[in-house]
Image 1: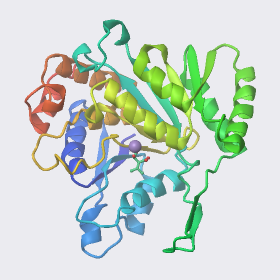
Image 2: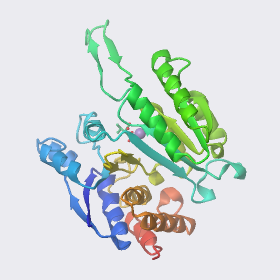
Image 3: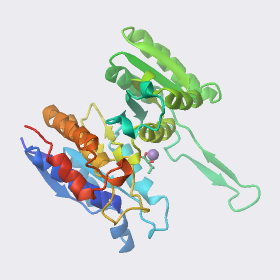
Length: 343
Ligand code: IPM
Ligand code: MN
């Protein structure tokens, strides 16, 4: 059956890379139908909501959402990107955020030691709880006695289900990251749920790190990690770090999924990149790899593999944008991938 994809390019860099990602999917020959939705700065600047209710309903019904980026300096409200993105993550209960980091070519590694370059890891980030839920408030606002409280929400159910996803996605090694030495309540729940999950999965080698140590170990030797499972904020921070280990934000893909309902929103990690957007130089690889994760989620594993191999080939040949040492435009870099798709 034809799969229906809701395409939401969003703002700036998103508008440049998402059409290229769609072009790559089409070139694989997959029978997908694409419907595009306008979300982001354009409606806001017309005095409309960033994402209309009708759009929210429509994208919620699609088989998958291919999302670009939200954020535009012409919109002064710095909170509006989060409103759109977090709303979709929360309301569709996309509790698993998968952020893989693979090094496709040694030259992209910032690490000196060649032995530290076999990077192929996955961050499994909790995506619907933690410090992102927007609970809390500001009291005595605007006075010298103002108090701001941001609640860190962690539930038995939420922690349990994300840990389970970590176990399912690891083949050999799973590392859980928290900050239970300082955050006793939330950390206590994570530790208890971790002990239960480990007991249920004796087949895997497990390890626990505090987030500060995890950041250090990721830089010291990222090859020691296979899957890292962690909370919302730590996953956000560590996934920028892991992107930098494999070529930067331009190559980092992500999937926001609910494995039970099969709903999914797929977005490159790089955001709208206002500093470089609009010049035709934004790297489409993050979006193409993201589209690959979507295609895999929809059950078309062969096409997903072909897309990833084509990206690897183009990067190794230097046929890529300047952030990866090439000289191609966004469109040419996507063409280089398309030219390498094999049946
Ligand atoms: C990301 C982004 C978002 C997040 C922002 C835009 C709310 O940084 O997808 O990593 O923190 O999750
Ligand atoms: Mn982030």
